[in-house]
Length: 341
Ligand SMILES: Cc1ncc(COP(=O)(O)O)c(C=O)c1O
Image 1 (cartoon, rainbow, N blue to C red):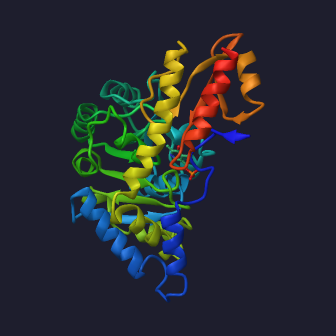
Image 2: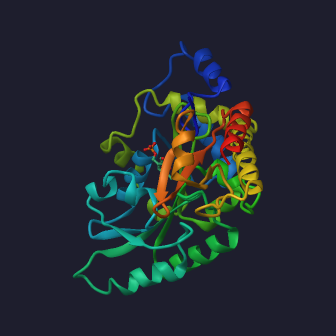
């Protein structure tokens, strides 16, 4: 059984494990004050092209989202998310559990637009309702689509005009930035959004997300928020070592490129076989639509998520490739498909 279920099925890239091993017995300060974390933070600031941002290393996506969003909002304020957004459907109400409602906007390609956000603002005119204050997006999105620079500029501009915070979940930022269709660079982001995180967990790290806070007014006391939410690791060095390895040369981008290339091979073969897709997703997640009978056959050899029922006979599945997906496994899947199609 080979898994195309997600991009965290494997452990960590050997270069990261090696760095963890080699530093194992070095004594360091705790809670992110070790030399590895400090060096990783400097490196990330260099890569995002701004020395005035604050960078914090946390362990996972949900933890980063709930710690950041709850720190950025006042008690009566709410977040806005695409209806497919991870914080809405897949984080067990983590944001709501911090006291902040998440308001949903239907968008067919998973991407929020100024019009969608505007409609939410219009629907929340006064103090008898929560006050929409933070716009949550992810890049890539939950359904594998990516934001173009112009789209982010428009959304960011709208947020600034309306005094909203624009926050980008980058659990799969590597894949988004390495997509063939991408026109953004890591160092564009501080100009375009108020805070974002760079996902390590889904891109070759054992675990870890690097939150970058760009807007000054969001920076105060963030380490207090982290500690209170249980997000400050005593052995914070584990995160520092990993992010240093990811960014000291091109590993972060090489790994994301590999994942995208594997998804590209699958996508190409499916297009050749005239398979339809649920959505346009130029990143490491693809959503082909298959007859249910074919899905049942594929499930005997491969694991993946059955994503959405399309009609009585057809469903879309989600195929995710990772930094470690084997080319032979992709070829095997394509061969298997050919047998049945
Ligand atoms: C876009 C996005 N954000 C956040 C998360 C949550 O990450 P974690 O499972 O590490 O809490 C995920 C996980 O799949 C994700 O895809």
